[in-house]
Length: 421
Ligand code: LLP
Image 1 (tube, rainbow, N blue to C red):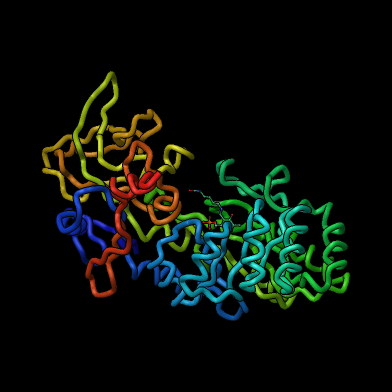
Image 2 (image 1 turned 30 degrees about the vertical axis):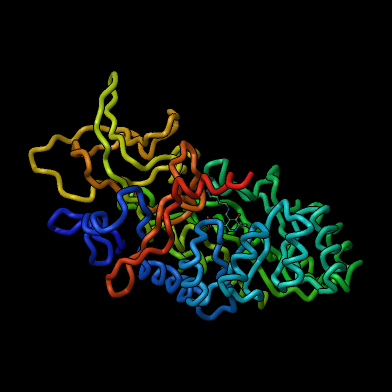
């Protein structure tokens, strides 16, 4: 069941609320609208799937860093995956348990690592220089750091090249042929480092669980090799990356249960704790970007619906040619013609589109139009290009009420960066 769906009256609803009514009750600008109960349901799906395993659900904060959403995920028992000093600060500020947090990244600075060592989160070793910095951070803070080795298993995730991360020429992680070098280096620093596990992350939007299984088979083999050398490691981190149904065309995609079941026996056979790092599959389908139609125009052979939202609020279509489902929030009169439209924003770039060649009824100016599955990598990748200013966020709570969960940025916010200079 999807939290945003059309009822018989032809209107789009979210958790019992008519999206049209929400539009009329909030500021007149594009906004993100989330379902809080859907966030809960997504976490529960992972929790149920993980039953019988020792595990950490490390939510990938990069997907969506709204403080209210983070607090909710933390209350539901999630840990967090962090890729910058500020994401680490945010996880700590929103009360995440540091022993359920993993600090990851190929360019962690010494300053960030000092904070990580101080706070007691797990740290992934990504390269030779990264290892040097982790050792320095341990020395500076006097803390022994729990580390995982991020190994690059070279399994093809079969996704857009921009979101593939585990192939052999990737900038992330270490190659397996360097494993021994890293084990020797860790062994030489027993006061600074405690090797507790191995990590991999193949990529994002993965829609075949066999890919995770292939990687897990390789990873437990590495874990066997690491244990053979006397390391008592207990964590296998298989990263994130489970895809979602962006097309809304009836495809059956793997669920969290399918994902966990494909690695369950391997994890149990080695008596491991499983860490997973979902971002998209926890948060993407909980949200729509709600826009208003500014007008409709035609040029050459193209029809355009121009909306107030744009690549500034939601860049995935422009950046990855990603498909996100689009529909109008209110029913079209039955005699309205369906045409093929490009749905575009007002930004001065031809790459500013939210959808291409979509069959839609010709909308009236002012009509509501949503871009679905906008909970992950949309607001967190928003910019202020063309001074669009980042939009406000709302969610619908369990009792059906609408609450603001982030203020929209304003022109005054922009001017503030220059005051007193
Ligand atoms: N763990 C690591 C180490 C990662 O690099 C990522 C995502 C995740 C976990 C979470 O992956 P997820 O479950 O969300 O697929 N901006 C792109 C996605 C970039 C993903 C980067 N890494 C997009 O909009 O599709």
